[in-house]
Length: 121
Figure 1 (tube, one colour):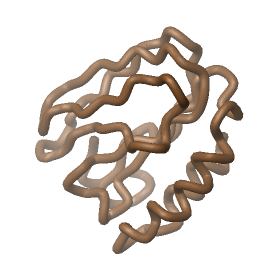
Figure 2 (cartoon, helix red, strand yellow; figure 1 turned 180 degrees about the vertical axis):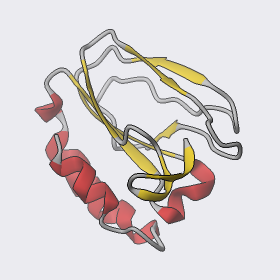
Figure 3 (cartoon, one colour; figure 1 turned 30 degrees about the vertical axis):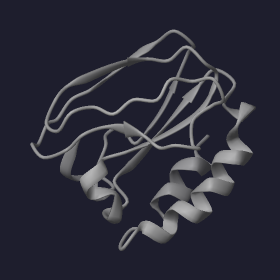
Figure 4 (tube, one colour; figure 1 turned 90 degrees about the vertical axis):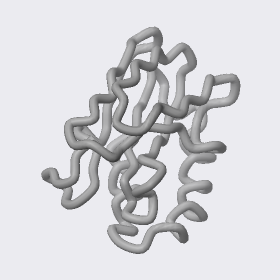
C-alpha cells in the first residue's frame, strides 16, 4: 500500500498477483492511511470477503479459485485497486470484467488502471 509506485499515485505493489489456492497474501501498509478490502461482486462465488483496518497489516488466505479485485477504501476514487488470480482465474473473470465497467465510474483518475490489471490475467 503505497502513496507512489511504479504505476503512479495510490497503488498496491505488486498490483497483480497470481497464486495457488491456499496461499496467504500479506497486505502491508508501507505508507499510512491505507487499507485493503475486497470489492463486493468482484470476488469468486463462495469466497470470503475482507475489510482490513486502516494502516493495519492484514493476512488473507485464498481458498476459492478465481479472480479477486480489492481496493483501498479511502482512495478508491484514485483507482487504488489490485487484482489477485487464484488458481483458475477464469472461474469468474467475465463477471469481474463486467463489474469493473461499472466500478470505473467511481474513479476520478487512472480510470484505465483496473482494465490494465485485468488484462494481465
